[in-house]
Length: 373
Ligand SMILES: Cc1ncc(COP(=O)(O)O)c(C=O)c1O
Image 1 (cartoon, rainbow, N blue to C red):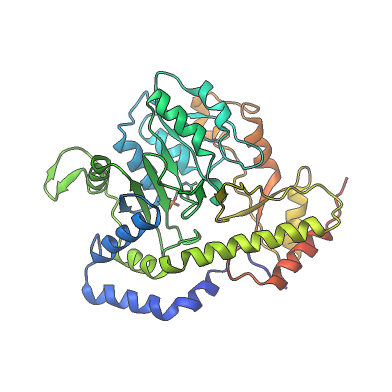
Image 2: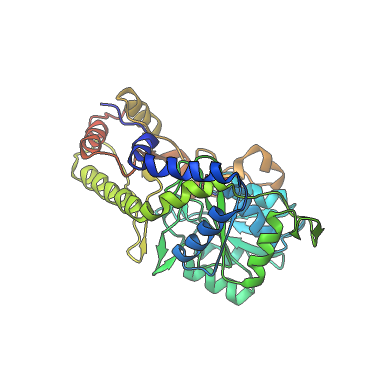
């Protein structure tokens, strides 16, 4: 049996006709950028995320950059975030000349540990940027409380977490700005790059709209310098077709996750394997199903590969140890939980179309692994 890490074909086949009609509609209109499809998507995403506004842009990475620009993050400012995330989380801060201030993660959820955040706040802290890693919200209440007490706005990096909730609140609706990615592998993935921002405040939303079109509210008058980060009509059309199925797909992912966890707990494993933590007060959309295999991760992944099971490490190098961030002065050992997670975790295939047979095969393959020491 072959179990790829992700199978986008399976989803495509189920919505092929609708997608082709949507693409044809855009081609016939010959309107390609920020048109009716984008406006429709923005309205639907705002509703879906329980926010007043949604503003489409060219990628999740741009969404993060635009969010920080809209909150006036500048050289010399500090932005508190997690070292255990996709590179864009740290890069958007550095690109504005600001300083990423990393705070270690909670070893069970892999999200930023809110109990460590207060110590990282300084008079220069401009924004706090938690990441909802793997599709489960960071523990937002303590962060929101800190934000209120210190007057620090919060940007949610919800790139992996569209539809996730924390105590009934949707990802992207709790902080000042939410940032989402429509990269094709995401739970809601486009046919290329795309992203969207959510915001509750009218002025922030208006500024985000301006910033994504070179800082101008019309084509030739520019109040400030922004960037070119528009969302394509083709992307929006594809996403408009997919959005109505998103909850069904995310629920299916969560169901597959539950099945894996049960199968693995019922297996008599010869090595320690930690299954994902699911917060009881939230909805985990399982963008990734991530296991922890201390001491055996790499050999276990090799074993899976030899049995045609895909797996991948998200993320092998924490941000504070990236070469480009050497100038920040962090060193190995500064964030032991993030470093341990980088050394011990890996993701299994987990998508709506995965079959139970495939899951049983993956679990059996894991069970047949014999540690070398
Ligand atoms: C946590 C996180 N932040 C930001 C991004 C950036 O999104 P994009 O790839 O759409 O630029 C991603 C995408 O992989 C992500 O996972």
